[in-house]
Amino acid sequence: MSVVILQDEIVHYEVLGRGRPLILLHGWVGSWRYWIPTMQAVSITFRAYSIDLWGFGDTAKEPSRYSINQQTSLLVDFMDKMGIAKVALVGHGLGALVALNFTVQHPEVVDRLMAISSPLGIEMVNTRMRTANPTELADWLLGRGPAAESARMEVPKTDLQSVTISLSELQELDMLKLSMQLNTACLFVYGQNDPAITVPQYEVFTSLPERTHQIVLEQSGHFPMLDESSKFNRLLADFLSLPSGESPRQLQLKEEWKRRVR
Image 1 (cartoon, rainbow, N blue to C red):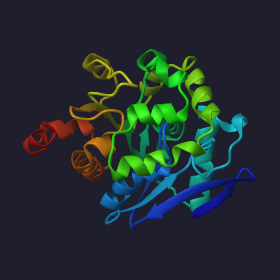
Image 2 (tube, rainbow, N blue to C red):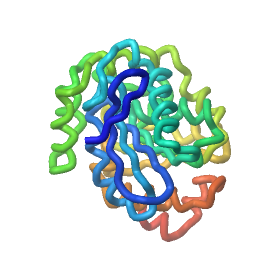
Image 3 (cartoon, rainbow, N blue to C red):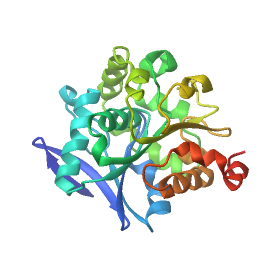
Image 4 (cartoon, rainbow, N blue to C red):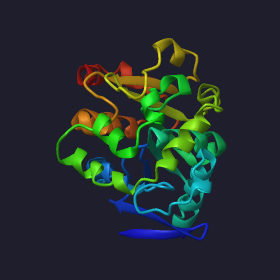
């Protein structure tokens, strides 16, 4: 287990691979652990870091740190500690909100961003997300299989307030307006069958900057990286291999890609 001391508290992370840095940020259910298959898939060309955010996994539990801005500060401090000057970010759920917030605040250090199951407003979030405890959420959102079970085993470590505080904060945040400020290549990924987060209408994304794009995985729920791991990993590899600064909308122009995501 790898840890660093940030803001006088323990932050747990794991790292795998060599190459350009990639940071993976988990969502409201689980911890760094469900990223293991993704980390293995990219480890040949990327040095993949996965962090437990405040209140999750083996990172410190302190409610005063559970706001999205405080979670963003954790990412800032972690990158400083690791000496990471330029990064690709992959965030899921809560992690996607943190990654979006960080990218708008620090566009010069983010080469590209994949935001998975990211609500652009509180109206996109099923009310059950705000009322159920972490174990109930895991039973609702996670499937079965070794990868899902590895995520489930981390759920008891979650401080419920880390979920409720960030979701309450989302009521005051306009994530769509924040996304309008993106000047970084950003791919939004959703599961068609996600019971927790409503897939935005396609028209929403036509109003976003040119460097943004949306892809919906038709057989996925809230955890596309687990539900359709092979397809998700191919999508991530294609996105990461785009030349720096190129819009992810180019992905839809490749016949090979069209065959892959149907």
